[in-house]
Image 1 (cartoon, one colour):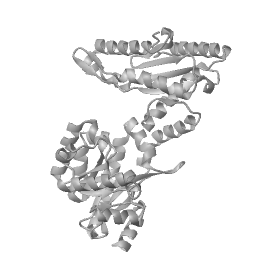
Image 2 (spheres, one colour; image 1 turned 60 degrees about the vertical axis):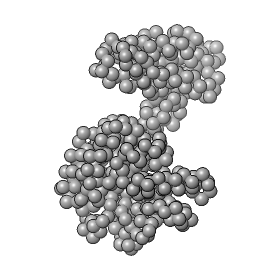
Image 3 (cartoon, helix red, strand yellow; image 1 turned 90 degrees about the horizontal axis):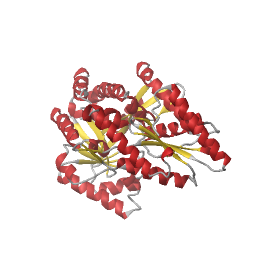
Length: 424
């Protein structure tokens, strides 16, 4: 069935159809589910492949979904990039996950169109009839809420939960308030010390953004950065972080000229054509040296477009900025990193440090990372150090730097400066 629901009338038709399916299921004492599928990449592909090819891709996807379902009326195309699949009888959540994973796998399988190989990643939200209050409209909205929750939390095949409504209200509130937060100076940088292990002295810090929200209190970046990335507001936040970091760095380096401050960059930050100009302008305005600023990117960020990432990081290094590979060991680690990526340091992920003393294999991994890094003149930072035993083990392995709650939690600027004065 094709039901492109851009108009209110067609949307009402879809709600009516779902209402009928719900009523039939209730009469027969069975539960049904719907799987809402959105392939956002298709919206941007028309420029590259043309509308005719785009329609062909959409039809291929529909054919694959039809092949997974027993009845053709159970697959509805809701838009050029959207589909809805009805599961007429649901056994349990495990059954739902299996069906959704099969549908997802069919969409992910590469499509060949006019010499082009197209790979797609669907966003999927799932709703079951026992959560729908017998309303076709609510049934659809529950699946939509599940899909949006998955996009925000970077998960796929998400099944609706009644707690999503409160969570999504907070998400929408934060999205709405981000611009106001910048204007009203509600963001604040916290600083977590980075300790040079050979000297047991402060070498620098990592700058971590916090949001002092008037309603929700102090909010950590994990709760609002994904929202900002999805909405496009991440660039305004990054501009604030870079300018604020340089302003604070100008104060600290007057007393500690070799102090280095690390700031985190997302994938969209790294791909922004304005990043270099923003960084160069900021260090110029606040009269700080590029060598005092370290740009942190995760392995996953690098792998999004490895060639473009290498080019951007090379430019950063040419200007004099440090480059740190964050969460090392959790992504797609390979020896090619050491010879391709112009990094100055690696940060070993906290998960390895947590089990350093109890898992012999993790200790071997940490030892291997340190050994390889030193062969390529990279310094190594251990994240999440929380005990003297872990610290002693890292010193024994010749790790260069460490940060974690054993030394200090992230602190507001004034508290950090007092801590640093006391601990230097």
